[in-house]
Image (tube, rainbow, N blue to C red; front, top):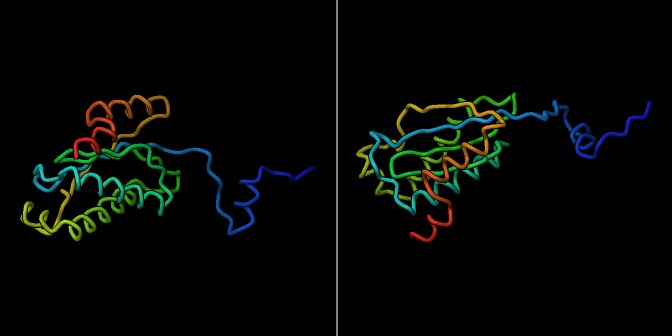
Length: 152
């Protein structure tokens, strides 16, 4: 019996053993600013998207789409079966909130507090067949990234 595996699997097995997952669970996560106040401007949204991308890269989440409006944020993310959606949301909201507050002190004044985000968030599971439809719906609602850059 020959034990030649694909290069990705061989590399994964050489280090510490971890299961190799070929499936991902996709979630559409939505959260709002504290009091649903419309305080996020184009400059905040641009930095927020970078922060979300950076957090996803560091934690191994697959960021499919992220977009924001003045009072809420949508993140379409893919997680492996071993990753918890609650932990992922806590990581994304926590990092983004702290970084936004430190970079933009005016948010603290506008929101009248030390918190950027509301405690609540909603999570919707997205099947692989609906992934493109949900991504298109988000782009229609918030416009493509190029429009955001042109408006600034």
